[in-house]
Image 1: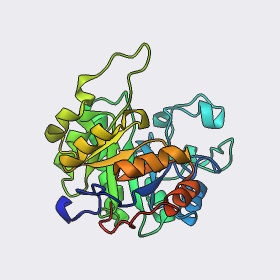
Image 2 (image 1 turned 90 degrees about the horizontal axis):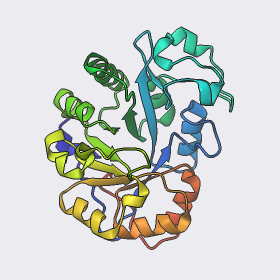
Image 3 (image 1 turned 90 degrees about the vertical axis):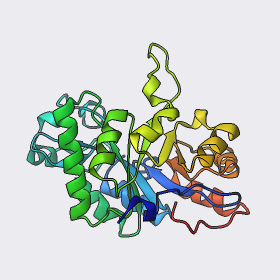
Image 4 (image 1 turned 135 degrees about the horizontal axis):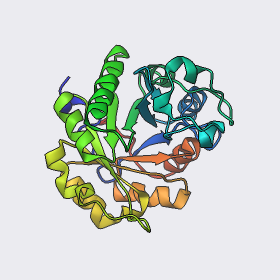
Length: 269
């Protein structure tokens, strides 16, 4: 399938069109993030899909996990890329649940769910980046999910590699506001999007002002904003015409949007 027919391609919200609701790491306010339970709960609450994080473990499989190591979510020091899948299967997360593979997550979300797959691994070198892209591509194909996946990353080089490898599966650039003690990275500016092959931008909420959203929309880009839980802000972003709202509380976002006078989206994005 070409990127032109993808439900994510050109999915720019028009005036009065309801944005998609994507559950951030699943329904992560109520269930342990990036677990099958969080994904199933999100879909049961009416989300259009989920956002999740992936990286390769030591044995090469693509697992769904945000952090580089297990310290925050399992109280253990090991890195994900140092453990084989069999070892990760034995890890029990402190909030409940286990670490799934990407294929398991895609199946848990159901056949119609949009899935925003964020490629993690800030320390990856070129060979490891190629390995992650190849492994995610293969997992998406085995799951028959190419027509409902969008890949995102903070790393422009990873997105360029993805776009060259899988032009049929769209991608989006993640970017955030400058943080103290962090130098700004010019390549995260949206003016480089044409060079990367992106069809979407994934800005942090604080970067979404009406002028910026309108500018992205004029360029034919989907605008998928993260991470938004406050009802008033959800309403404001819907009025701006964003394409998707990534939220920790999908049930609440669905309810807020349902109460607005908006037309349900029919273009898939």
